[in-house]
Length: 534
Image 1: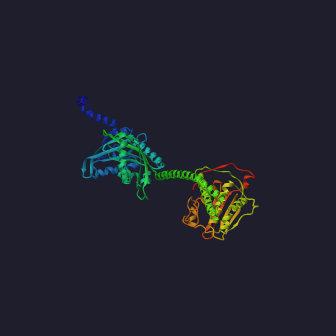
Image 2: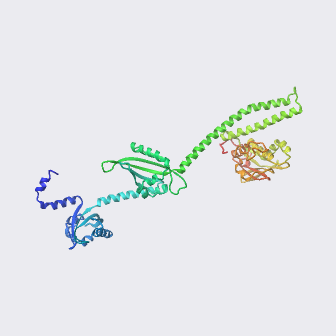
Image 3: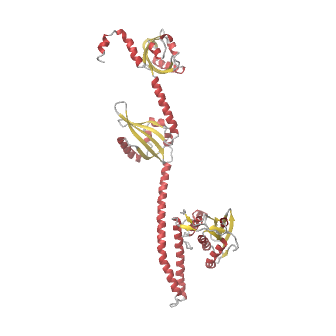
């Protein structure tokens, strides 16, 4: 420029206006003036040329120029000038569309001010510039279209998409937040953009220091930021857990420095976190259950060996011909043997329970005649029935009903149910076993006239080791029998149900697959009993 100045000064100064016009036109801007008294426009050759008109194609008056302005934009342009004329603005500025010679609308920016006043509030001469802003408007339109597409996509994304910018001084602001902000935080995107601290105020206070440290680390290393923390949205019943994932990028700020922009995503993970915690608790409970099962199995096996020895020596003492016992001694030795048998049955039940819980109990289903099974169980329990002075009713031996079940395990089920019906009955009461068919199943029912079960106890009746208030009662037991009974029945593809009325009695019904459906005389392959809930 310094080398050009001497030549410029030596040139004819009359060429300066044309040179200035060329420079302005090259910059997409023209200069104009308007004599408001005579309504005559001056210097608009370049302005009309910008629209593709020849000078004589456009009237050189304000009214003539107004005919080129889009009807929807005229009022705003006139209002801008009026505010300036009334002294409300030092100058005026307005954007509008003007029709080109080719019939297309072009965006123009008009800036101006009154240069000479005829009188207060009455303009004499107005000067200004006209700039082609078509490229800027097209860029804005493209940017808006991109934002609209992003917003449409974001509507279908659960959570919030956002852009967060931090300048060189550490001041941060949201430049974009999707509509998901409302559902997550109870804040609109406009509120977040206007007041970034509004979100900070919702974060749990004990989380803020940790989040500040990890965010700064992300900024320093330009590494992804991923954090889970609690927020307290307005009106929420309690805290919500959110997961934030963002990637920082360093960009020029246009002022010679740089700013950081995090492009991120926030989602509500409250339910997922609760599910993860529930899974972890379930896994811990399962591990504890496995440990308990293993312990019970080991202890049960360890108890059987000395117990068998005690029972064996009791039998030797009772029947030793070389040292016969007195009647009193024989009775006490028999009590030792009977107690040992009872304990051995309990250990057997405990072992079965641990085998089922670990999935190591195998069933061998086959057709089981139910009337014969009931008779066998009754014979085994006859002494207990006589001692309790009960009446026991059984189905007729000629009943044709059969069940598809493991015979040994089904006998164990019926013995448990009959034993309970005897133990929890009243002197002179009744126990009845009935058989029936229903919906492709056979139903084996055990009914008693005993003390019954309270309604609030029924939902927990089949829980292992739960005696439902009988721990300190007169009736002995461990709380294993019914839990094991249910597991065995379900392991044979059956189900068990109970009805009970306190002080009147209970009825347990075992539903099993009908043996007649399996075909005469056939036996099914062994079935591995799966782990069953207890």
